[in-house]
Amino acid sequence: MSETTVYQPDLLYVGGRFLEGRALAVGVDGRILEAAAIPPEAHVIRLPGRALLPGLVNGHSHAFQRLIRGRTEYVVSGREADDFWSWREAMYRAAEALGPDDVYVASRQVFVEMALAGITTVGEFHYLHHQADGTPYGNRNALAHSVIRAARDAGLRICLLRVGYARAGFQVAPNPRQRRFLDPDVETYLATTETLVREVRGDAAVSVGLAPHSVRAVPREWLSAIASAPSRGLPVHMHVAEQPKEIEACLAEHGRRPVELLSDLGLLGPGFTAVHGVHLTEEEVGMLGRARATVCACPSTERNLGDGIVPADALVKAGARISLGSDSQATVDLLDEARQLEGHLRLARLRRAVLDPGGGAVDGLAARLLGMATVEGARSLGLATGTLDAGAPADFFTVDLAHPSLVGASAESLLASIVLGGDKAAVREVAVAGRLIVKDGHHPLAEQSGRTFHSLARSLYS
Image (cartoon, rainbow, N blue to C red; front, side, top):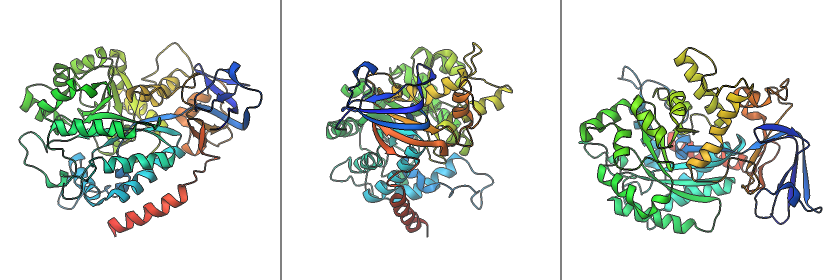
């Protein structure tokens, strides 16, 4: 941006409520200015009929899995039922086939979809590293750079969570379908991640995190090394307690459940995010809460794969934080992830407004869910986004107040209408660092990305 820009919506969400007659001023560095710092010659962009909110933060994504949407929704012949493990075999088909350009095409498509849904930041849990036969590329981070380039071309901010993957599981024979994921040892994994940190330095919209895949894919010595690594200051994300088989294997190998093991090794803390956290004991919930760790819930995927329900109410009560992710890209709608999180708990607890913080506020539940989709997601990725405070990056989205899903909302009920009842088609403008990447519901790459992605999908599945 070459000048100060002032965005003037009808309603601006600041301080936990919508205010009229307020504007969002963005400096040349893409950060939000104090109102008193707005120069008289600033470029003003009116946004009539819009409410403006902080950009959504997608805390957990596997971008290439967009290719398998709609292609796993049946029971494979010869099986009595379908579950996570049979779905995983179908996922491998896409993972085995993609080169760097294909990874870019698949990633760009889903990142464009994210932008159109008001998502401004993505945490990409990236485990596709090597060539199809397992041979590393000349640059071990080649595919990571394909994903990063796709995010930046789509306009998103990205935290590339580079996955460490060592094995198929405890006392499990090597799986040739996983050979693209594997690093030979933890030293190589850490060195490659540190190289990626240096390679992306200079782009304020790109950051890096550590991501040991899971206790089944990473042995104890890897986890110990990651816990004590110089790069430990990076955010750490890990699949935790997604499936009962994972817990059974952890007990067999370590005599400890996953969260207990991570606590023993010193991995739990405010910079740690447990992705899923479905099958937790009361003691494990307490450990995560006392550590002030985050649990990234991905309700659309947890529902799609039959994983189970994240005990978000117990986790919040214990002091843990909750973020949200689109994970397998079964759908891309972060506010719907928020309403699914609450909806699943209503079915399980047989009551309404389970995550309402109390106090009688009409928008209390909606504000908590929005916080999970913004501030908590940003915190889990080590970023300062998710708010519209002065000094923060100007990442935001708007909704059309005349959209059919929002018509009739009062000032008091508007936030609940957006979070718990709004359609993602109501999203009209999206900005990252103050630059509009979606205007009036249109992303400039949508048509080209869709055509290229369609060709890739046909080549893989025809």
